[in-house]
Amino acid sequence: MNEVLKSFLINFSLKDGLSPDRESIKRQLSNMNGMYSDQKAYEQLIKEDPLIYEFYDCGILEKESSIAFGTSITYPGKVGNEYFMTKGHFHNIMDTAEVYYCLSGCGYMMMETMRGNWETQKMTTGTAVYVPGNYAHRSINTSDLEPLVTFFAFRGDAGHDYGKIESKGFRKLIVEKDGQPEIIDNPKWEN
Amino acid sequence: MNEVLKSFLINFSLKDGLSPDRESIKRQLSNMNGMYSDQKAYEQLIKEDPLIYEFYDCGILEKESSIAFGTSITYPGKVGNEYFMTKGHFHNIMDTAEVYYCLSGCGYMMMETMRGNWETQKMTTGTAVYVPGNYAHRSINTSDLEPLVTFFAFRGDAGHDYGKIESKGFRKLIVEKDGQPEIIDNPKWEN
Image 1 (cartoon, rainbow over the protein chains, first blue to last red):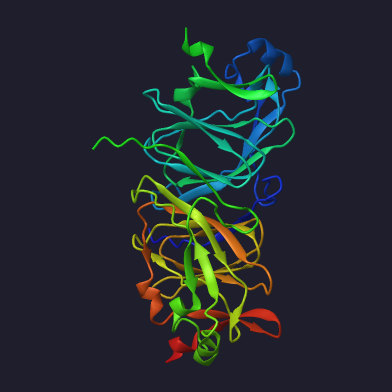
Image 2: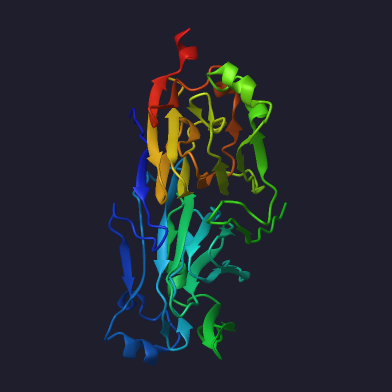
């Protein structure tokens, strides 16, 4: 195969992260059943089934020499007292890293390894967060008003593994307490 | 070696691309002797030796699983009628790609392969440009007033090869003609 690769461009608004050039992948609350700790609050909110986040897959060739990129937009809101967040994922090629550059809004990057190391980084406009390999990672929007918008980049063949994190979730949650974000243990992990 | 990798964050202003957390690498005109086509104009301007561009090397481990990232800021100006630009480089691992996301300003990404394929992409605020592997690439600021600011990401072990492009330069130049950018042949390539 004599593959001719061409450059290309995609526009992403710096204001809201949305692209006029591509269709985003959308995750509504109904796509996240069991992922929030307050199931009653989930069942209340599911009637509205709000859009929790959306992101772009730019269709980059899945090769170790390529770079996948796009924007991710997590909307403001809570399920009970737990902030809207992305599902979170490991990479299929576990040791591959990812970079997120926060374009607007604020929140946290939550990270944990299979062995139970966990870390958070606070994101505000202009913050670049380096997620090392072997860490599952999830974006959490702690603003009441603004979407959390990031530009991300990772190795083209890294792949997404949602399964490992889907059943029990992350070891830590970020919830609102007295109007402030607080990191707490995930009760499902105590069972 | 049992390497424990930690996440970290670095701030880059969305306004001017500068980081309060790291020292940038600066390229003044005197670092680019022979790279602009109008040597007389170069010698005139070298008295001032203006800052042409600066960028960040965040010191990421040079591994195929890591992602190097940072911002690049190319200032407005011209040497004769040729716009301020970066030196441009291939990657040492030739087939590795790079992504540039334009945070402010406008200009062009100029790209060419060893075999002579060349491409340009116009960058404006919010444009993400995918530079495929095997293309040398250079940022060119075509604004009279504003810096061209990009956030870039590439594979951690890709490496920079400036040598191949340093002697003859790129096959194409971007110059101002009647107040507009124009792509012309590089006269050095005609010799």
